[in-house]
Image (tube, rainbow, N blue to C red):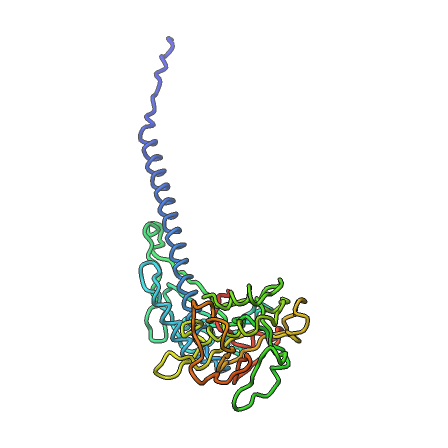
Length: 369
């Protein structure tokens, strides 16, 4: 028998290759779409974080210093400021049912922030902090309205994920910090205040100037420049030791007088004569120490804070304008009439040690978490 000829069989791979290419393009588009959606969610998450930060700061600014945990003004401010922000093109919605627990129907709590332990207790007292959660979820508020709704995605719908939820939380507190350039003798915290107010001055040893720095303090060249600046200090004083000075008494008091009667300086902590821009009180927080006038060249350990409400600041006349004339504000006629020395009058004082500083409501809110 003759040998049969072997006829080669040629396979056509073109159809299989097209299928592989199509599958690859599909997977590539899916991964690109997924990456785009993940990026979009990161943007939405950042927007929610900005909203919760702003809302918490706005709420903390409205805390009233009481132990009552409702804090309606703080909650309302947090609610309103959250709505000023957008997340994934829609206004941020938060829910408030006046409880002190984050839940499906509540995004705002008030409570106590302990800076030493870095812990927040919702409903804890004294109330010095506000917690706000901003979210885009499918949850509903107490009235049944959607909390913004989940974020609609662009490409993930092809894998069964047309939307995704996101949330962010922030806590802002008002723990005390030094807000003026002088220190108070700690024993002044326990001294009774007469009906006309208590006088504090350098000559009695109850106060001394400080730059709130651990370096040497010079009232003429350092403290006066700081007092006359337009930036209100907000400096953590506990765990520090500051140098003090009793020099340049008249000049420095006149500069403090300018700060007091400047209606725009630290305006949020001042009250005014009704219908005018004349300052009637100014509340500041200052560090306390054993004896600020003793050995000014040595550092004085900060023992705590004092929140004082000043009703007037008087520097003896003469020697030029306060703050070099840049902010030439004086006490109204008759307020400091006949003054032969430099002094501050306070009608309220509240103190706390460094260990219990969170018991004293600070002047300015700050984000802590």
